[in-house]
Each structure stands twice: as C-alpha cells, then as structure tokens.
Image (cartoon, rainbow, N blue to C red; front, side):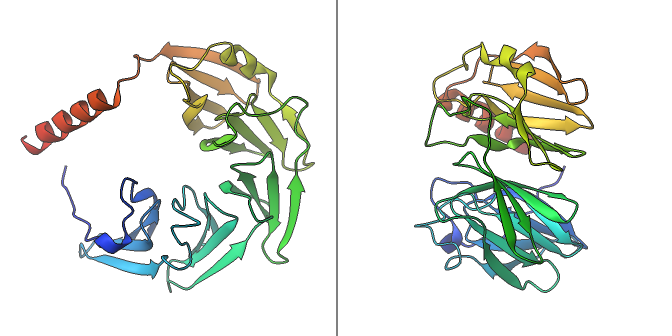
Amino acid sequence: YEIYPLHLEQKYMLEGEGNFFNICLYKNKLFLIPFAYRAVIAYDIETGETEHCLDLSELFPVEEDNLMFHQYEYLNDSIILLPALRSNKLLEFNLETYQYKVHRIGQKGYRLNSIHRYNNAYWIVCLNRLKILRWEYESNRITEFDDFPEGCTTRNSERAFFNVRGIFRYKNRLVCIPAYCNMAVELNLDTGAIRKLEAFDKCFQLPPAYENVSWTDTGLQNGSLIYFLYGNRKIFCYDIESETVSEICDVPPPLSYSDRKKVNNDYIDAMVGG
C-alpha cells in the first residue's frame, strides 16, 4: 500500500476529535466529509493536491456544532446533503462548483442523524429525539413521525437513540437498530407507521460488555441482511425479509484504552517498518 499525505491546517482542527468520518468520490477528487475539521476538503487523486473547498468555521461554529457530519445523501449527481450531528442544520454542497446552502430541518434543539432518500423525499432520523422527519426538498415541507411503540425510551438521554451506523433502508422499510434506545423499530416509508421489531428482544437480554457502551455501534448491510455488533459482545445477523435474528459469533473482550493505543501503535510501527 501507499500513504498519500493530506495537507491540513491546524486552525481547522478541534483538539481531541477526529477530523473526518466519511468520504465521497466525485470525478477525480475524494471529498472528505468533516467530523470535527472546520472545512470540506478535496484530495485530487491525479495530482495529489489537497484543496480546501469550504470554510465551515462560521457556518458551523464549535460552540453549537463541535462535531458535524457522519453521513450524506445525493440530491443529484453533483450535490450532496449532509445532516448535522449537533443541530438541526443540513448542509447542501455542490461538488462541482463548491456552492452551498444551509437548511434548517425541524425544530431548534433537534440533532440530526442519518439521511435516506426514498421516492421524492428525504427521511432523517433525529439523534436526540424519538422523531423521524420527512423532508420534501422542492417545497421545504417537513413532516414529523413520532408515534413510536409504547414503552420506547432510552437508557441514556445524553446519547443517541439510534446511531447512524445502525440505520438501514431496504425497499420501503427503514430499520433502526438502537444505540441507547430500548428497542429496535421499523418505519414504513409509504405509510409512516412505526412498529417494534420483536426479534431483537433476544439480544437485549444480554448486558453490554461494559458500562455506557451502546447496544449497537456498527453494522453492515448486504441486501436484506444486516450484520451488527451488539454491545461489543456478539455479532448478530438480522434478516429483514423473515424478521429473524441469528447469532454469528462472540467477539473478544474489549481492550482498555491504553491497550488499544499500544496495539494501534505497534501495528503502525510494523507497517511503516515493513
């Protein structure tokens, strides 16, 4: 493998936080989706140049949006939409011209999460509310869906109900595997009905591997199958068609921070040293 340096600027960095979370390929450029870095940047895969395309320092000030984006969705071939993690802002960014708009989606105090396009609307799951928003771009009409199953709540009101890496669209279904919510739910994108997915109850009988870890922190979709890591303890597979959950395997006990740091440093040293 080869290492390609990015020419970042210290003034855009936020101490203690990661710079980027996602990536978008457009023509000959890799656009890095900022997590805490105060700019959208593009890396030219032909010339190796790093370009700062949009300064986000004033649009998303640290005081309100210390962390910015996880996911994006396409408006068209050259425009992406990025919901903010710490506010109800949504950045519209043109990958060709670098022009932008900032939209407000839902009420002040809402924090946005995943975004999925279905037919002529965008479905956005709130991070800190039991709310799912349907946004029609052309009319700017927003419809809120909050009729969650009885008893649906969270075990940590300061953390995400559902994590972006646990939200998946399959046909007209939006499956939300919980982060700190106490149940998995499915939204019918045609009717707006939200129902509990009973098959996940078997998972929640197991406590997470350590205190304050989310139920699920990562997942991978392959068609109708969703593979997810539960509580840093086990890997499960959820079949959307049959609505069944099967256990795949256990995972090793989680390492402490110092152990993880040592493993990462040893790995990097080994790779650099050949």
